[in-house]
Structures are given as structure tokens and as C-alpha cells.
Amino acid sequence: MTLTEKIKTQVQEGPLHFSLIDPDKQSPSEAGTLAAHADDAGSAAIMVGGSTLLSQKQVDDTVKAIKENSSLPVILFPSAAKFLSQYADAVFFMSLLNSRNLGYVIREHVKGAPFVKHTGIEPISMGYLIVEPGMTAGKMGEVDLVKKDDIKTAVGYALSAEYLGMDFFYLEAGSGASEPVSDEMIAAVKQNISIPLCVGGGIRSVKTVKQKVMAGADIIVTGTALEKEEDVKQKIGAMIHSLK
Ligand code: 1GP
Image (cartoon, rainbow, N blue to C red; front, side, top):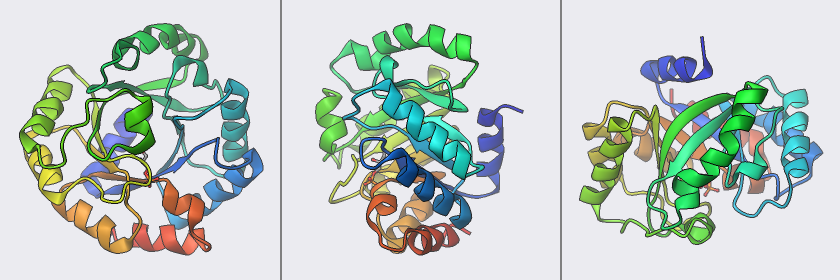
């Protein structure tokens, strides 16, 4: 069974939590410790990526440390082809649908696809949409941000992702967003698509996790909560517990 199939099966049984680790935010050994905590707490996968990466080595070293310290699948969340790592299990082969820069829509993919083929890491097709405020991802991704109350446009993008054959759709408010994607937007997108819906950006509390899942999120992604909380294990554990 591929990881894509496994995740799709898992979300049918209930919502999942994915932990995002940005290699730029801590040393590889610290990333390994965070991943171990996320694993213990019940996160279903570790995503590795960020908008401000410097080198492939940084990604390789972080992925290796995570693999050594947890049994969770590692899925790359790349901002460019040069940040792929052969040590990961899979890569979100994602198109940033509302970028003005064709590189993020398809051209970086053309550069990275042969690497994915040769290394055998699993490509997981995903449509990626950045909604206000968008934060660093919105700026670096040269995005025409979807307005936070423009539900019609978000639904149009989500349907397009599904019709283009993508396996997942990701609604992103940007790491550290003051407000996550609204419940109304999540609910409208969920009602219109049949592929799993990921939601991330600005989700920091158990209450927000519950709200976003009630609205229709299948997969909750958190990054900052894993970086900043003193007792990461307890915090992420409580979020995951609230999914059950
Ligand atoms: C990853 O933006 C999310 O795509 C992570 O956001 O850091 O706010 O959890 P946070």
C-alpha cells in the first residue's frame, strides 16, 4: 500500500494531525527530539519544509535525524526542487495554485520530478492554496492571496485541484497566522470536494483544532505549536486527543 492510500484510508476513520518541522528553525538533533515527541503524542506524519531554507544538506540532516528518532513517515513539503531529500519517505508534489510565479505552479516540479523518480520517494499529489494573511509563505510564494471571506474562489480552486486529479487539497493561512482559515471557508470547501482536506496556519490551541475539524478538516497541520510550546508533547498530545 502506498502512503497516499494509507493516509486516504486513515482519514476515512477519523481526522489526522501532521507535524511540520522547518529545518531552518532548529538543529537536526533538536528536530529529531521534536519528531520523537510528535510520534509519542500520536501525530500521523512529519512534514519537513519551510520558506527560508538554505541548503539541501540542511534538509537531508533534518530528515535523517527525524528518521532516527521516530517511526513516523516523513513527507517533504518543499519550496523548491533543490530542497528535496532522498532520505524522506514521500514528497507533497504540490502546486501552489494561486502563485503568480509559474515556478511554484509547475516549473520547479519539472526540475524535481527526475529526482523523485530516481530516488523512489513517493510523490503525493496536492493542490496548495494560500489564504489571507498568508504570512511568509504568501510573500515568498508570490501569491495572489485568496481573501479570507472569498469562499467562492476557494471552492473554485479546490474543485479544480480535484478535477486535475490531485489526491489532497491544502488550505493554508500561513505559518504563524493570527487567524487560521475560517470555519465557513473550510466547510464550503469540504462540502464540494471528495479528496481529503488539509488545513494549516495559525492553529495553536485545542479549541481551534476542534473547530477546524468540526468545520470539515481531515488533516490538521501544525508547525509553530511544535516549535514553541515548552511541553510540546503535552500540547500536541492534547490537540491530537481532541481529534478522537
Ligand atoms: C504549515 O502553515 C502551516 O503549512 C503551519 O502553520 O506554524 O502556524 O502552525 P503554524
